[in-house]
Length: 290
Image (cartoon, rainbow, N blue to C red; front, side, top):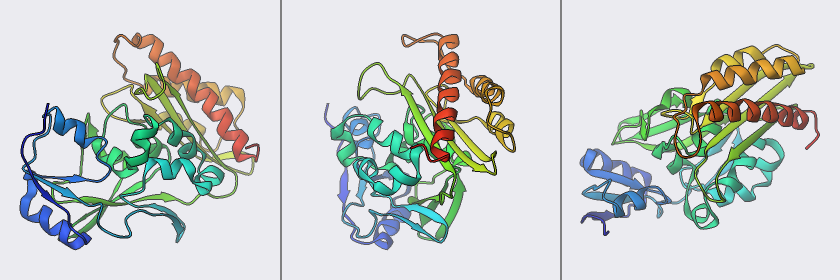
């Protein structure tokens, strides 16, 4: 099927792009990597009258640590994340997730920001950002605002971004010493959407958990932050009992539906097992075990 007719725009500055969105409103869609939007256009699940392609705008493809924050630009692609030595050494949950995003063709063009805005409950990056306690900078012609990842997702394919806004930057607290993370994903075949996935991020402090983040993929109407599990970990020593308690709470936070991939009980059990494994792997990495 071919997309419905639309008018194509290729602004060369962010100000020009934001001006177009301000003028066109709900009639426009932003094109970054296009790996989520283009299939929707072809199937006519989305039929915008205008397409605003931001790929000609300079300086939007960046990953940098600055002022105590890891900053990610709207054109930073999955493949760049997969190849990043910075992520591999300091942001393990992102480094784990990147090579598990779809397939190499998708990773070559798709962007982290585009995936997050698409807000597929089976998408990986939303879950990772929840575990990392990320903030999203949403910019419009009238200014910018910052939204916590936990407040950004509102349902399947639904977020708090407005039609006149662009996700201009993702901000993650810079990794400190004794930080570790992991992303575990169950898929039927390479490149498939997750049946279940779990993101874990730990910051250790004098032998105890200083902070913890746990995100769940594909087990609810949106990416889920397992807040009770995180709370159970904070200030605790990471022994077997603590890990099992947190994993049980993460499984309780899951809201899976039974389908051809598995029963509710099966998916909750995968959440529990992956949380246990993820916490142990994150702890090992926080201690310098790689």
